[in-house]
Image (tube, rainbow, N blue to C red; front, side):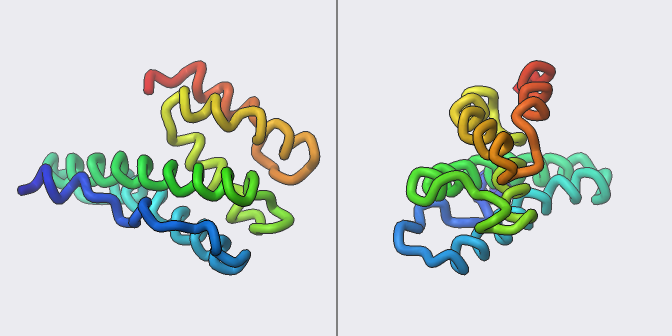
Length: 138
C-alpha cells in the first residue's frame, strides 16, 4: 500500500491545456512550482524517519515526471515560458522542471532555453543546466 500511494503525483498530467488562457497557464506554473518544491523541502527539512524519507523521494519522482509532461504540453502549444509572459517565477519554474529531469529531457529543451536566455527572456542560462547534466548521475 505504501508503494502504491507514494507513486501517485500530486497533479493530473493527463489534463488538456490547449485552450488555457494566459492566466490559467500562469496559475499552472505556480502550481507546478509548489509541487516541484514540496517534497524537496520535506526531504531537506522533514522527518528523518526512513519510511517518510522514502515517501518524500517517491512523491518527488512522481511529481517530477508529471511536471515534465505538463511542461512539454505547455511548450509544444505555447512556446517556452518567458519572464515577459509568465513572470520571473513562471520562467524559473520551467527551468527547474528541466533542471530536475534526466539528461535526455534536458537536452530536448536546451536549444529553447539558450534562445530565451540570449534574448533576455529568462535569467537562468543553459550553461547552468549543462553543468548539472555533466555532473549528474541521473
